[in-house]
Amino acid sequence: MSDYRREIHRSLNALIAANEAGFEALAAQVIADDSVWDIAHPVNRLSGRAAVIEGFLRPLRAALGHVRRRDEIFIGGENSRTAGGLWAASVTHYVGTFHAPLFGLLPSRRLAFLRSGEFYRIEEGRIAEAKIIIDLPDLARQAGRMPLPPMLGTEMLFPGPATHDGVLPATGSGTASLDLVQAMLGDLHVYDPDNAHSEGQTGHDGRWHDDMLWYGPAGIGSNYRWEGFVADHRAAFLAAFPDRKGGNHYCRLGDGNYAAVSGWPSMTMTHRGDYLGVPASGKALTLRVMDFYRCDFSGPRGKIAENWVCLDYGDLFHQMGVDLIAQANALAG
Image 1 (cartoon, rainbow, N blue to C red):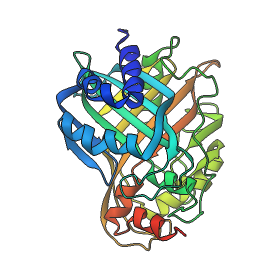
Image 2: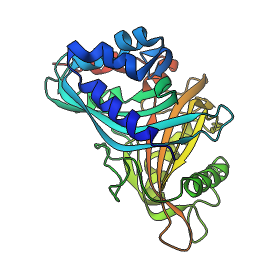
Image 3: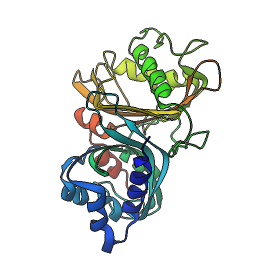
C-alpha cells in the first residue's frame, strides 16, 4: 500500500508536540481547510480547521503540559464501506501532566495518559475528516474521581499489542484480518438471552482465540477470555440494552494482522435495564463505537486475539440525563 500512513503518523505526532511558534503553520499542512472533526462529548462536531484548532487541539495542548502522543496501534487502508477513500486509524494515549481543566474536567496536576481512538480520512495528504473518542471518564479515574461505579472489569491503562507490531504493521494480510472480523460481527448480533452467548464466537470453529484479551473504556474495564468478556461486560450490557443493534459503520479497514471498524453512532438501543448506577429510563439511545482488533493466523484458523474498544460514554450518559464530568468534579476535595 501507499505509505501515506507513515506520513500522517509522523505529522500527527509532530503537530501535538509542536512549539507554539510553528503550531498553526504545521496544522495548515496537516489539516484541510474545510476538515470536519467529530469528537467525543462534550466537544462533538467541529467544522473547519480553525474550529478544530481552537475547539480541540489548543485545549488539549493547554491541559496536558508538554503533551505527546504514545501510539499503540496506527494502521491504514481503503475503507470497505460505501464512503470509500483512504483512512488511518489509531489507538493512542495523549501523555502529559494534567495541570489545567480539559473540557470542564478538573485537573489532577499529575502525569496522565488520556486514551483516544481515532479515525482519519485522508485526501491529498491532509486530514479531510476525523472521528475521535477520548476517554474523559478514564482521565477522571486517573485523577481519583471516577464518576462511574466499580461494577465490571479491571480498570487499567490500554496496553499495546502483545506482538508489539501495531504501529505501521509491515506483515500480514489486511484483507484476511478484516474478513475475520466481519464474519465475527455478522454472528455477534444474535445471542441467547439466557447466557449472552452467540454462535460462531468460541471453540474450534469460533472467531475468538481461547486466550482473547478485551480492553474496554472506563466503566467497563478490561477482561480475559470469552467468559471474562461475558461476565465483565456483555451480560450487564445486554441486560440493560436487550434490543441493541450494531454495525452501522462509516469505516471498516484492514492492515496487516489488524482491523478497525467504527460507527458514529454504531448502535441503537433502548435503556430497559439498570446500567452502571443509572436506573432504566426506557429512552431510545445511540452509541458511538470504535473497535480495533489484532488477529492471529499462526494456527490452522485465524482467530481474534486482542480487541481494543473505545465507546463515547460521555455522550451515552448525557442521553440518559447524567453529566459524567460534573459527577467527577463533585468528587474533588
